[in-house]
Length: 478
Image (cartoon, rainbow, N blue to C red; front, side, top):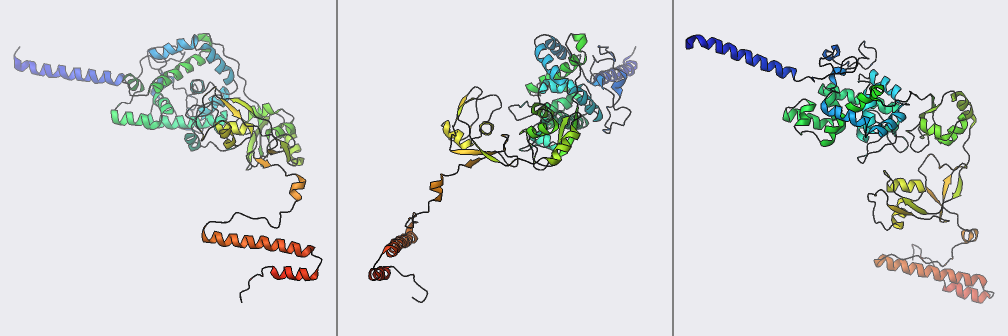
């Protein structure tokens, strides 16, 4: 065959190769080992893979309960390695977390579905973030089961102030986390990237995508574009989600669901949870468990929606209508001691716990300024003895309308009733004005002593002579 006749065939062959390569590149964007409807690897994408997870947050969409399993690559080799770890070395911590989470997972799943987020994330994210510990606090200041930092929590509607920290509230924090995750998914179009951004920040993922042209999580991970923590975070979430969802299959004990039962009442006055427990016929530990956001155990002065045990709201409302706070009393302060620093302790929290000023705590430990504390460090708590007293109610609760504060102890009656001496001298000021002030002070003291002698003099002649010697106050005419 001549060279002229071979050219069309060569061109056709090149075109076929280009089309084949482009088709492979397109198909490689999807995970190859995806979960089928039965939870096992099928090697084929399920019908849900071609559907976009619903953006409707009202819960009224027909796809609101759809789980986008085909988008989560739980059969990735590294994820499967972590699945094995959750069944072996990490099994005790996983089962403890599932025990704690049995109270919260049902409502968490319902909230995630309402916000258009995979309900399996109710297992994956909190297990990795906090193990469902409501008061968990990271070194970076993230708090709660979903580990919100202050700025992000407030951006998604959580109240964080001196009385309330709603990052600890499992219902409100879940709602905020669901909306944040959904916003991240809408921004990046992929749940893996949404989880990565949840861990490291959306700005970091956006820079990798825009500056490096990489839009796939696994590719970012393999090329080393992600922080090491984030590279492990997403696989750990997927593995925890897989094991918890298939606990029976993996031989993990799954405790029965034990959702919290409560009623909510709006309280518009500052009152302690001790009193709330008394009025509703419950105990304070139950009230604290139901209201983890009230970090001081006191309803804020501007009011708050408080959860009560199921069936106690009516009794509480009747009792609250006639309840009057007892008058505040002065109680003697407690003696000092030694405190061993635990994880999360700060000088401010320790000072508040023992009801001593931070400055006194610094002086007692030879510290010039506040500095980070080390776990296990022993701090001397200054004894307060009779130097001050704490203003509290009769039941020992501090006044709810302000931070616990020290009130100066009353002076002895004899000293309190004693009038100052008429010739008391105050420290003069400096300079020429100080000289004049000193002169006036000395003249005033001398005049006072002269008047005292006049008052006790029996002789009118002597009284007149002393009175004449007393300096006369100048008038404007002098």
